Length: 107
Length: 123
Image 1 (cartoon, helix red, strand yellow):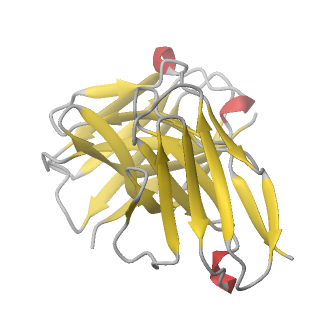
Image 2 (image 1 turned 90 degrees about the vertical axis):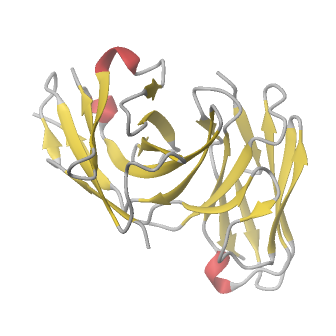
């Protein structure tokens, strides 16, 4: 199985900050990388697919980049509703696997 | 707008079989562009893909669970179902269903997801 490792595991930031979350794959996955946001008690929500494509309806302050083994999710200017846990998912090979999550808290 | 809704018992005894159904509304489960999948999340932990099914019945399973998992589809009811046998406390989790986007032979991202249902394994 391909292992996905996110860093940091947790992060404190303030409204208006620029935040970057990293996801590293244990082998090359081309651009088969997706990002989700999960709020407490809710289902994950797709933000970014295929490494850099913004899902319809997702604010443009979210962006994704990377290919191969290293990927980033960037939030350009944090809003109060962005405080949540973020997961990456590789869809290069079966079984699809997720990172352990990055919890983003208010500083 | 496509919606998915999980249903089934919230409590299952150890060694028994967990059974859940996902009902799809606002769209057809028989679309050629999608698989339909199950993902679970133990309390306070991360996400694990269980398996996915096409409307024709073709399935992909996570090898770590394959010996205990059966996913089936009922296109007449626009539903798909999960059975997980010989459950233990380690199977306690929120179980989500989701639409699993495909392109060619590639299974890609999940969108949208159901709201999830907590299944507790306990005697």
